[in-house]
Image (cartoon, rainbow, N blue to C red; front, top):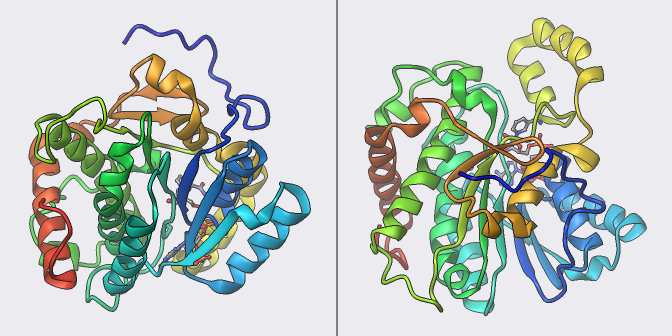
Length: 328
Ligand SMILES: NC(=O)c1ccc[n+]([C@@H]2O[C@H](COP(=O)([O-])OP(=O)(O)OC[C@H]3O[C@@H](n4cnc5c(N)ncnc54)[C@H](OP(=O)(O)O)[C@@H]3O)[C@@H](O)[C@H]2O)c1
């Protein structure tokens, strides 16, 4: 890819363009990096931001902080979306799809961090459900409105830890997914899954599975990002999983970690708002801080794995939601 990116800095205070008239959906916008993303979208005049998350008290705190520091918080509307419930995710997704006549960016940032194995109300590994399956359903449900919006963006917040996913992962069955492989692998597997899903989606859109690509129904810019090592509540989940060892590790690492609002939000904001994405045709890419497309792991480029994950996602969504508004 010939590059016109001259540096690798994307300052969210100065480099996000004016977003007047633009509409965004941000998952996990109530805390950490997602809050930083919402704050800067608001700072740069987005017309409307739908903040999707689960815990009402976090959303209220976020609204307060947005109103205090970042602009007209009435432009940020909280929608409860518990990603641990596919039925609930479906209600939120369909509600938005019905209401929206444009959508400039869907930023899938919500995520469970390194943490102990548990199962969702749909009887699935919660890591895979929250980080991959539920947000895949959001993406696919909102795809028609994203396709109708010129220069729209889909951003999936992955992690460089995708490089340390287990080598045995195949994404072949629910039984495989519902096996406790330990807190770190559970997380890393999902971060790999996000990149594979984004790639498969792009490939299928390009091949016309979702209809002919035209001027008025295009392909959104679909990219995955790594925010860096960022100081957020995610480290507390790792502490819970690894006890004293986790606590000691966190105490050592915290001072070196990035601030979520000033720095952790940068790659996702670059992917979601920068004109460089369309100018340079940055598509199906993996972007590391602040704005550098980089090769993901060889597993993340494995076409068999991405096809398997697509098939498994279809099975999970069809069996738990029933009739889908799209054909996978
Ligand atoms: N921090 C890092 O160093 C780092 C590094 C690489 C990648 N990442 C990725 O960056 C993203 C954001 O992480 P963060 O560090 O900012 O984490 P965080 O501070 O823990 O925030 C996580 C967000 O996800 C939401 N969320 C969690 N479970 C949910 C559920 N069941 N339904 C709906 N929303 C849910 C939370 O909403 P509630 O208000 O409902 O709790 C919160 O807004 C994640 O995808 C993470 O994997 C982080």
